Length: 262
Image (cartoon, rainbow, N blue to C red):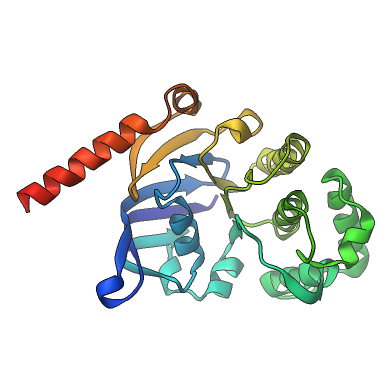
């Protein structure tokens, strides 16, 4: 049973006079077996939250804590966070020319587990997972994300998650750029992992369409760098019908009041 705890997290981007606060006091707890959806308009800080947890150097944590099973995540290097059980499926996966998918996956598994997986078992597992994700076997010999379509990139991200078996998976707008078929296949991959009951999922999106396939246990509305409302799956239905306008209006009014009273 793993627990990711985020308490009063503040994060800035930029340096000196150009520094801008993006996250303004985020509180969130994700446990194994739970799926949390973070929803909000573009520019609200959702991806900043994902990359801050993962340790992207662009983002500076100025306050608060992030712990995984009681261990200080913010004190860990990026690779230490991965070995501890954190996984980030990126919104825009990067190309890695010269490195095949098969070599990349086995190297990652070796780094996380501390030893190379047994080759016969590993090849069988990779082939099985690729078939379930409707990926051609030749895909394994292609260079990582080089020339991949949007759907191929996202399937590869889910393939990594399936094989590396993290404790907490952060899926940053995994639905972006996907057609209906790719969205279904990717969602099925996430659901297979959820059904095993050993992973906590933090699903970041601003559309409700992926939530028709992946049913969240909790929904958090994210506006202007913090959680402004929380609820169950029914909250996603409310957002589908009403949008984010009311939350943005309230946030702007609160910010104006804070400035006026300063």
